[in-house]
Image 1 (cartoon, rainbow, N blue to C red):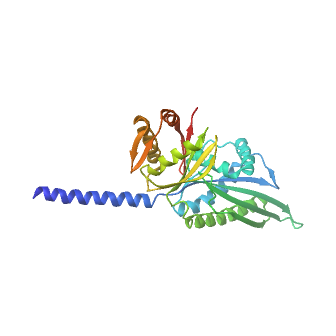
Image 2 (image 1 turned 180 degrees about the vertical axis):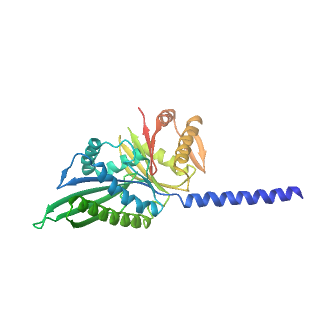
Image 3 (image 1 turned 60 degrees about the horizontal axis):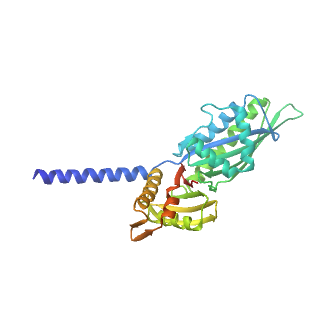
Length: 303
């Protein structure tokens, strides 16, 4: 009798745990950093720029947080204006790669860049006219475009130029924050269990084929498709995973490679046979994980 009661209690407890885990996974927040770059008349303005950046990002972040995004503020700690100006130039040359680096730096799923240019003139009646042109674009940590491109144009007028600038910045930031939050919420790309896996190094077609074969039988992977291969350089896969946490998936891949190595090249998993000579095994020993972000795992084939 007591054993049956205990079993019923245990089953109920395990069911609750399962539901709790499922709920936690379903409500996992998308982590984002918004990085605005500020210019006046297409020129960098130096000195006391922190207030502009904090004001612009603050209104945008308000909308993102209220829409249940996890927001990282790049100006909260150790912000340096000179370094930020260097980043502005880099963001214009290669925005996708820049966002990927920012995702790694701030440990986010998405990095969104804003380029703002402010123009101001004084009218004959001594009113200050301010115009802010904003352009925004974002990428995830695997350099994939998030599909939310924003362009805004706001004008304000005030007898006090400083107040006119504050009003313009507030309007454009609030409008951008609302659009960004709403459009990102409607994108399914970042709720799907899809990620990139890269293998870089002196890669032969044979090694690429073997690594793809390993991915397709790794625990947690439902499908792995190779969509790019460049000999002696890189091979890339688009992987659909079964709600497996990324770092666990990384561990599963590494463990499977070790199993093949320790079996001296004669191994079977899920009905798939792995049978390789000692030379191939030595090459597999050279595959190491170099980096893991929220959307990508990078392996390298060391020499």
